[in-house]
Image (cartoon, rainbow, N blue to C red; front, top):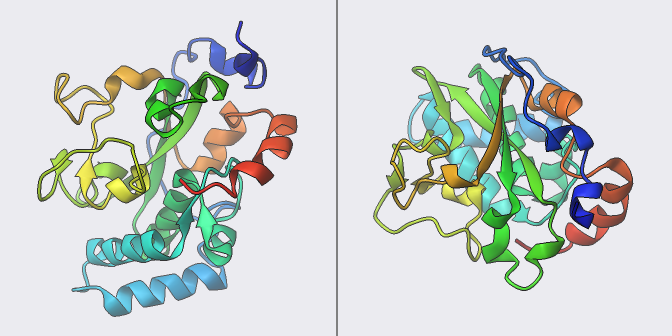
Length: 242
């Protein structure tokens, strides 16, 4: 067993339980993480609606995504239970934490959200850590949001179908994280594109299904690192730009 396996919750080293995360409905309720009734999120919603190209909720979400992309710096923070309002106020957060802000905006304007819990192999992040990839946790839990706009849309396909609008591809290099890519490229976690350049299904080790919110997913499955490891690593990693 690797050292990195020892610092991750033990229950993600086994196969998902039958029916785990089978709850498929979302909601617009506020949660401790998705605290859309907070002043910071309310102000972001007002800005997004004011500058959106139309009254369509999707237009407001696209505007909110652009604001978050430009004003919340991407870092390697680890504390998944950070309230969205805090991430927004302090101006930096991980890909997952910034997605939580977008989910909060969606819920505030009446769009239901849910998350799909995917266990991703650490090799997905090797392009970002070419020399020290071996120190990454061997398996990383990803809470991938979906939005109920004319049916459930994964975060990557919120603004367009699988592929990159305007050409190009997603490489997981440089400043374009999964959050940034959602505004330009739709990736494929399910192998629908059968090994194409947007097919990331080879990195998916387990699928724990759907949860009504990310709070429930992390409560039931735990976070990528155990609490003592996060206390040591998070203050360091959240200072490193993604």
